[in-house]
Length: 146
Image (cartoon, rainbow, N blue to C red; front, top):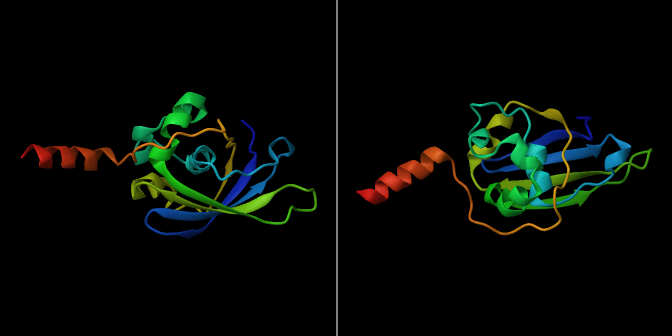
């Protein structure tokens, strides 16, 4: 899959990340503020030990129905500030992304720059309950059972 965007981390907080996004391929001259696009941008350097990998498989990110029903479980909010297009007319912008749990950013803690082939799999997302890291859910379940 060809890279469509260059992504750089600008600022990180516990459940927030601010990233700059630059279009680097003419077939993708858009940047969206949707939860699906944000989730795909953040789904980088994910390995089997990444908390997000335990909840989201790469194939899920490409599944329009899954993303429509689940993107908001991981992405709380996305704010986009567009910049001026570069000399080629390709877009760039800054995304402020808030995730529903800090674990969904854990795999990016030591990465400042990456390429992405993100897309926006649907134009309609359903608001849903936040998804939390499995360990936390199990702990809460056991606590409630006592």
